[in-house]
Length: 341
Image 1 (cartoon, one colour):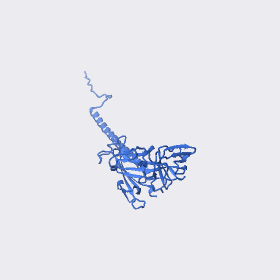
Image 2 (cartoon, rainbow, N blue to C red):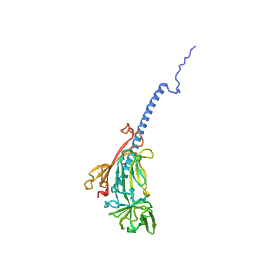
Image 3 (tube, one colour):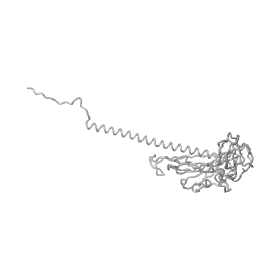
Image 4 (cartoon, rainbow, N blue to C red):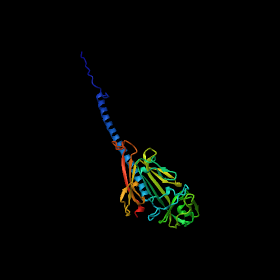
């Protein structure tokens, strides 16, 4: 009898992986995953760096442009030929002394070092060392805001009011505004006691309840321009988010200065002043505010900002400040137009 021998052979339908194959597949997957994670981390770092650089660039450009506009217009009283300071009539607290808020000392430009603080900025307000970051500079700019409005009635100093064309002036002024009037030879700064509208006219009273007197310093003709007084004080403080920021005090109604946070991430502002010592309307040297005897001799300014990223851990290593924030400096030199023409 024949005995049949059966040989076992693997089934053609057998499925699954051996342990070695699984280990190889896992190793390859981990290598691929590590590569993907490395790309992700690298892209994230690049994105954060670019975002920080963009934030700094945008903030720096905005700060420079805003301050340049004010600095170019320092002491503007209606035209560039007015070289003497206007007569300050504003007396909001009734002490018979003109208010410093409307004072054009230095023909509209005042500079301060951190060591000069505290600084009086209105009858009831003071800028102190608690408001300003240490070792940063402060600058005060005063000028008229060109509004294209001229006198249109009561063209005499014996009247305790002025009249303007309602088509141009209606809705532009209110009681408590600090205004400038100029005919390019002389000027006055006064507080509006009341503003009223009549047939074709806007009448602004400047009586002695909010001024040192009832009348302006002279009779102004129809060529005289009426403008809002602009007084801006720039400084570096701590913003609402805890970040250092560029601030600006702005003159508002009834002589109240209101602080505005302009740009986050500005941690330093240094200002030097181009002093014209020989009368040729060109800066002979750029010096700090506390070395200038007469601010009216300043014909240009140089402002240096340092901005930092809002987020930390941006750069690969810590810098001199001890953190890893991205930083960039911005410098701008501005000519004061009314002093070089």
